[in-house]
Image (tube, rainbow, N blue to C red; front, top):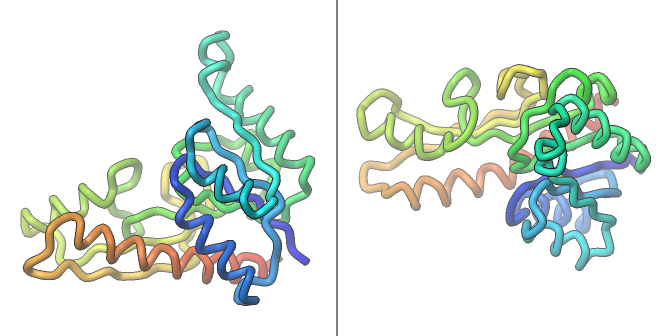
Length: 197
């Protein structure tokens, strides 16, 4: 059974999609650890309700002590490595990893990003896509799961989904449709990544 660690920063709806897929046999693996850099992330509660080990690992104690992001990444990599994951899935994890973390898990870290490849890297991608659509600059939105490299949202895509923006859409309509697509592709991408290991 392949071992998966999931890193989150929020409510954990994509974590839930992974747990649901495993429960019905659509994803051949087990989630052995859920990590959050935010203490109040509901995803931690989701994990605890399913008896999955959790780790709260905030950046602030490092910055407050004058320590570097590299030291944070290194220490977190050590903690995660104790669980021997085959795959690490960043599912709404709001923190950019550098080489010190990624080199610990080569070609084993994937990230969900709510925009198409080469567009709207970084935060608030959904809002930025919708604003660009309103301005007539784009005609479709989307999301992808990609391998993580030190450059933000620039790794090789594993799975891409195009998400239409309809003429009468409000941001909330597009957002709901995009999240539904995310829940599908995160499972597909995890399955694909595991099959390559």
